[in-house]
Image 1 (cartoon, helix red, strand yellow):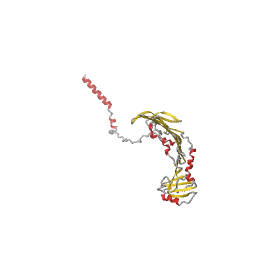
Image 2: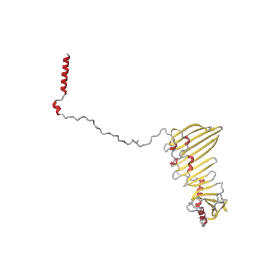
Image 3: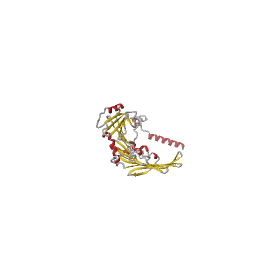
Image 4: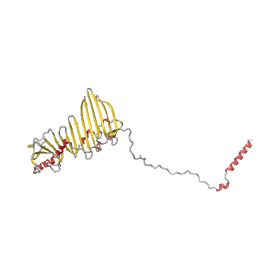
Length: 367
């Protein structure tokens, strides 16, 4: 049996080999195949491409808004406004109050400030390049140019929010029809040198422009039998609505007084210009004018008047020391006395500017 099986296996193997092998003629006609070589692929170096840039567009808005004191803009970027700042200081129940009202027009520049305090009102107006101040006691102060101190109480651009840095966003609202962000500082207690302090307040920021429209803070402090409540409120109104600022009727005389040296033709070294003027209501009746002038020596200044002929009604009556003069003309410096009709003027030069004193009561005399 085993022999028969072996013969069968051998016969099958021979048959399979005969079926799978190509014919001799087939083998002779086929060309030899080139030996297989690995395919060479060109090196694909990565060419660096420009970093992907975000599409230009508005910066994503932080929400909820966060207060940044240093990002605030100047309210003077508006065309015009009125801002009112009220300070209240209550010490052991005794209230002291101060109110500042400031009006402003950007072009042409003009402004005013009303400083109301117990017992009086100081008024300051900046018009046509001059600043006029009329104090509650009746004194006059006039100066050439504008005065940035006019806005000191408005605390631009902070808008009196410096104590409210920890205030939290409370929501979106309208303030005088303007969309605003409202921030609130809840009552926050602290202790400093045995003094209990509590601070609270809120403010409104314009969504468009990021400027302070309104702010209020109150600080309450107490120690033993002492209690103080100090609060500041600031509010912006009449935004872009003011059209003109003029001197009030009780200050019109000041504008005329500023022009007096020019109107009377007071002889001055060439190039001298008005710098300022002071009138003390309860003074000695002498108006004090300050005049800028090109720098010359004191001797050149005095020689100008020593050789000045009578002109336009003015006569030099004295060059030398002056009796009762409040500066140093009486003892250490020579000055000029000049008159026109009933107007007497003392000219004092310090090497940098001229002080012209209109001596209406004729207090001064040659020494």
